[in-house]
Length: 153
Image (tube, rainbow, N blue to C red; front, side, top):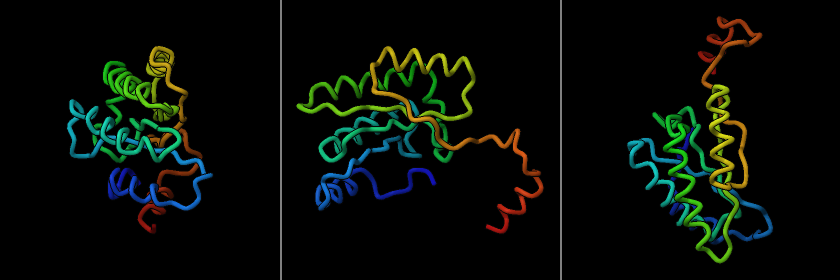
């Protein structure tokens, strides 16, 4: 779970050498867990540039529950900064790629309204709804049973 992988450079190398070029490939990009949120945009830009030639679209992931602090990037100002920066880079490529935003299912109505405004303002292609919830409220399964299943697995 989360972004555990070998990184954008390793992925780009594997995708560059893939045999079946007819399969649509998306790049799910995010910040490294050790990158402070104030520098997160650098990670998104790096991934975007490295993967642009080998993916068909991008998913800007600001909603993974397993990356500390990542969901704070769903706030209006940091999210606008990330998406506007990626869009400004994207238009400079001969073949710009669709950019989607992956959001959390735990957003408030006010946050969802902000997301709609951000999507319209930045003119990204759309929204991927949703990542994994961090809430266990309103489940039909008894919480004691859930704890037992987690311990067994």
